Image 1 (cartoon, rainbow, N blue to C red):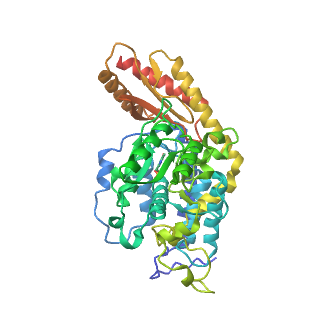
Image 2: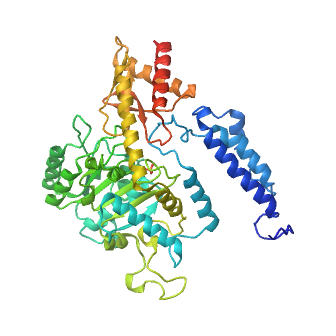
Image 3: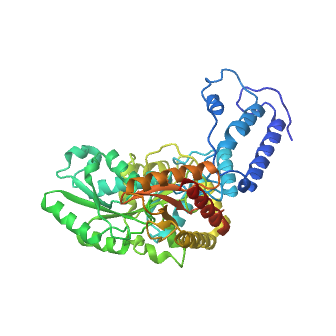
Length: 485
Ligand SMILES: *Cc1c(COP(=O)(O)O)cnc(C)c1O
């Protein structure tokens, strides 16, 4: 082992054996933290004196890595978001895994650039994308790439939809050359990143029609059909329907088969936002909920949510490879790269998305998929849906509490309603309740507003949650509600 510690001009450690000791300690500390996460508060506020440390200027001279690591331990580790904790159910997040995190470390040590070139890491990403196609049932010759998450995956899908459905060459002429406004349709429950994407595609948010939902928060297909007809009559150019496979508010799943039929009849692009629920297709018990997803022209998946891959990891899938490449590539196909050598090979992911330089996020996904396999993910999906239903039942049994939306998958919306309060009082009571739950450090749900009713919302996409955590949570919510009453 070369233990030579003579200083070098490179940025490598001056003393490799010191670095090795530090790296081993960092791994041990991280594992210890994860193993004992349950014993700590889910969340605590960051003290002002800690925040102040992050306002210091750029260091001019080198600092000892051991000192930097100590600062990480003292200033960063204790004040986390909380999403590694078994009682974190805010927004919609994965809790991460140790092996997935190891994948991130190993990827960074190899440090390939995934923009293209002939190296093995591209085959890893291609395999992971193939597995995602297999999950949702898209054909093997469909196209795709890994992206940062659902927002970017939706953006990629909608960019292809815009270009593929327009009558002019949008890449050359821009959207101003379009003879009629292309119109996209999604339910009022659609995720905000869809609107963001349509705005950034230069179409303006009014190009996104928000369609009413039924009592179960699914898109109203009849109303959608009427809106398409009205838009056609007004001279607009309906181009795409976006189905939600799991909405962020309540976890409702649109009738994807019905939407696929409608797209066929109306000759529209069918995009599915599957950031939450595309992976339901992995569960034999629950895949019926997303039947029809396999008919989509494009699908957005998140891997850092229900599948627990450490942030960031999402996947964009496009049925037609030529349309996908035609939206992003600046290299004509016939000029593709060299025949041999490093710049050869068929896998140039930079031609399928916005990024040129890209990290090796595929490795943590590949390692995680191998570690757990389809069956373990299916069990996780089934178990967390079961836990959400158990939580809903517990809420309904608890005096003064009520469910605010039906529970279809793993999202539970409920509120405290002791009676005798008007709508506004109820909303502020529940807002205060949520904040006190956060401050208790016992659990971290989040909130939403449904039909003007502010409610607490628990999204159980957390592989560490045990059944007893739900009881602890309801007990605590009850205790705080009692204090507030
Ligand atoms: C989380 C989410 C998104 C956005 O995904 P990110 O990974 O956060 O970018 C899009 N749609 C739905 C339904 C989501 O839940």
